[in-house]
Length: 293
Image (tube, rainbow, N blue to C red; front, side, top):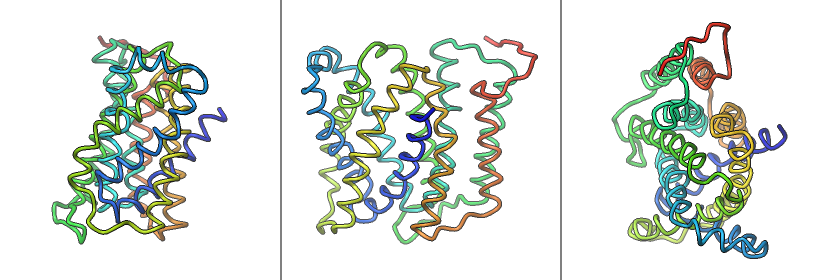
C-alpha cells in the first residue's frame, strides 16, 4: 500500500515537471531527455547488481515495452501539456486502468462481466463529457489545439494499457529493475532520431533542465521500479489502478505551483471517469456477476 500511494504522489508531480520542460524543450525532446536521464540513472544499478545478462537476454521485449510504456506516452503528454492543464491531463490519465481492462479482455481473455462493460461505457462517457466542455480544434498560442491534446492523452493511456498486458504476458519473472532500466533505454533509442530533428534552437534554461532532471530520476527511474514491482506482485490491472490517485496529486500540484483553476465540471467528469474505471477494472463489484466472453 505504501508503494501504491508513493507512486501516485510521484507520478502526480510528473505532469508539473513535464509542463515546465515542454515549454522550452518541445514535446519530443522533453520525452527523450526524460527517458535518457532515467536510463543513465538505472543502468548502473542493473550493472552493480549483476543483472545485465538478464537485460541482454530479454532486450527486444523490454525495449518494445519501453516505447509503449514510456517513449510514446511521454511524448504525447508533453505535447498535450502545451495546451491543456496538468489537472485535465491527469484526469484523462485516470482512464489507464479502463484501457488496461479492455486490452486484457481482448488479448489475455480476462473475463469481462456486464458490470465491467457498463463501467467501460461510463468511463468513456466521462471522457466525452470532459471533451464536450473543453475540446476545441482552435490552436492556442503554442500552436496546439485542446482537442488534439486530449486525443494525445488518450493515445498515451491506450499505450499504457497495452504495455501492462504485454509485461504480464512476456516479462513475468524478470527483475523490476531490469525491466525499468531496459525500457528507458529502449525508449531513448526509439526517440533519439525524431527528437534530434525537433531539438530546440535556443538552449533551454536552468529551470527546464532541473525539471527534466527531477522527472527523469524521480518520476521515471524510481517510479518505474515501483510500478513494475507492483505489476509483478499484484498484476497489471491492480498496478494500473494507481492512476485513480494520480489526478488528486496532479491537481493539487497544479493549483499550488501553477495557479491552475479546477472547475466543478472537471471534478464531476473526473468522478464519472473514476467510477466507470473502478467498475471496468472490477474494483467495485456487485453480487450479480454474469460473465461475458
